[in-house]
Image 1: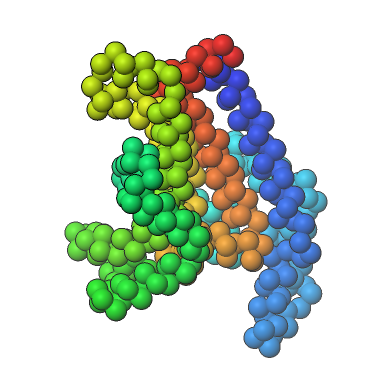
Image 2: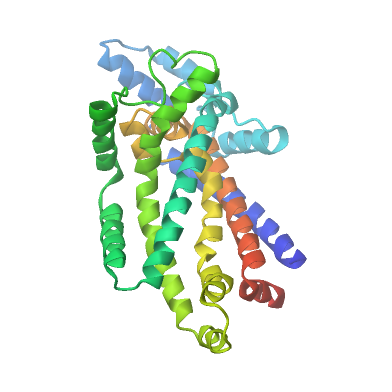
Amino acid sequence: MLRFLVRRLLWMAVTLAAISFVTFVVIKLPPGDYTSTVIANAEARGQDIPDSQIAELKRHYGLDKPFLVQYLTWISGVVLHGDLGQSFAWNQSVASLIGNRVLLSMVLSIASLLFVWAIAFPIGIYSALRQYSPGDYVASFLGFIGMAVPEFMLALVMMYVGFRYFGQSVGGLFSPEYADAAWNLGKLLDLVSHLWIPIVVVGVAGTAGLIRITRANLLDELHKPYVATARAKGLPEWKLLLKYPVRMSLSPFFSTVGWLLPGLISGETIVSVVMSLPTSGPLLLGAVKSQDMYLVGSFVLILSTLTVIGTMLSDLALAWWDPRIRARFQKG
């Protein structure tokens, strides 16, 4: 396991270095830069920006320097000083800008993941144990519907239901009177009252997919020889199911742990835009549209770092849970 960890850490460093460079290349591929966005916005207002002012903007943001100089300046600040750079559009540090959104993204991601786990695993286990029963057909039908319905459409429906039948303000995570208020018990309760709609919207597709995976894995385990052997030895049915096949079928529970870390930052961008959620997704989308390269690059770098860390944690959790995977690591 120690060799595995050392090898993964080395590959993580190489992977993140490659991702940071490729991300910077992709950001610079479209014609123009952030000053092009500034010029377009000024022209839309009927204003003209002198060439001297454009040149000053390029110098101020460092856009007049060669590509490699821009990249090395940014990545050296990240590695040596933990400085993610300055956002062009927001005129403030990227770290403080992202930090303001992380808390709400984290709450939404964790709540959605717990919602998925709490619903998907019991239904998946029931469907496998009652294969081809009416309950199995209903669960399968609802699972296919959940996977097929676009999240933005479900968001619109849930917003209508919340407004029409529950009298909640549509969009956002807070009522208007709490939007800019300091944190207190009232604001926390208001957040909880608004949170159920995005949790359901974000969690439906994941729940449907995880139900199918859990059902398929458990059905595969139930027909293996060790189950028949344990049943022939007289092991109680409930004990047999929980100790062996159900345990082996819950591997998706641990493999999805790796999704949690990047989900804390990214959330569901389309759902957040449709529902006007003050999370990180809309901020990233706006940064891409305005070519705010340090903000975009920092987002992608953070998401990549959390993804590779989350993947490693998932592998370790799977090795702890499933002795077959642990044996494979030890052989490697």
